[in-house]
Length: 178
Image (cartoon, rainbow, N blue to C red; front, top):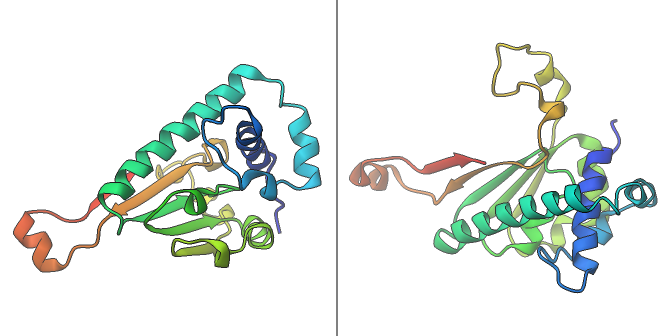
């Protein structure tokens, strides 16, 4: 089983540092719980990197605000985090049903540190081995070079519509990927 990636610990460390600051931008009070001793040691190398950390914080802020707007307008949305890593949005944002998909080792670690039972929103975690997907080759553009992609690939379906509602409104459910 693969361990939690250093990238996941880095992103979590950025959110932890933000939460501990005098004026948090994201305010992820779960981030520290998600850090292990190994993750904290790894974070030490990067905690003084002002611009990359600020960029990571800004990125998280933009995604959080986008999802807040969506969930405010459509609280019955389903949010799917592919390669969820140590993300805590399901705990921090109000509304929606959440699905977190990641490697079995990440899901197991996250279940120990931040159990699903503590989430106020409906949350399901799904372990998946991404390796077979990577082996599909260059013809599969949906997978592409997953290892070099961001860990915040988020797909969501805004609102559940019955077939009658879809037909009368002239369209299907809103599905997007950010």
